Each structure stands twice: as structure tokens, then as C-alpha cells.
Length: 142
Image (cartoon, rainbow, N blue to C red; front, side):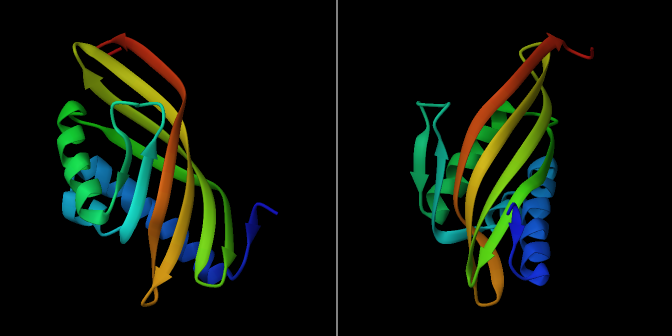
């Protein structure tokens, strides 16, 4: 079943995802970093030059550097499934990003396979693995 477990936890996990997306759009490293567990792992297999980043501090530092390449980004995310089992959960989520780069406007769509954990009553990302689904590139402003 794509959605299972207590509704309160599923709502909190959805809000975690929405807070993540909001922080990306606002380029707010503190708010974005607050969505990750201390011992988290972020995997970007479509970007072998980045690969897997482990640990909260390393993940946030990598994100701050990467965001320099995504000026004016608009980032949206929504869940495709959330399955809660006690203080852990798995979620599949989809993303849509629009940003300008090198004179072009890019529109990326992708999917995350996530694990989340509840720490002191708060849901956090334990691991995220991102795969690109589609990229559209057009002259800037089109």
C-alpha cells in the first residue's frame, strides 16, 4: 500500500518534505539542514562527481556549494508514497525544479527514495537517493 501507518506521522513526514522544498526555494541552508538527521546519507547516483555524502555537516556544506549553480531556483516536491513503521518510514517523492543556468532555463523532474526517522518526536531524513527522470532546456525566459 503506498500510504500506511498513522495519519499524524504521514502528515508530519509530508510537512518535512514541504519544509525541505521551501528551504531549497528560499536558499535557506539552516532550514534545509534542519530536515536531516545527524548521521544522514545523501546519494546522487546521476552525479558521479558527487556520489554519496554522509553526515549532517558534510551534507549541508555540499548543498551550500551546489546551490551556487542554481540561482533563482523554484523547487517543488510531493510524495508518491509514505509507509510508516514505528519511528521509521520510507517515502518515494517526486520533484520539479526550474532554474536559469548558462543562459538557459532548465526544468528538471526527478524522484527521491527516502528513509525517515523520528528523533525526539520530530521526523528527519535519514537517507535520500535522487534519480533524474526528465530534463528540459530552453533559451532563458522561454
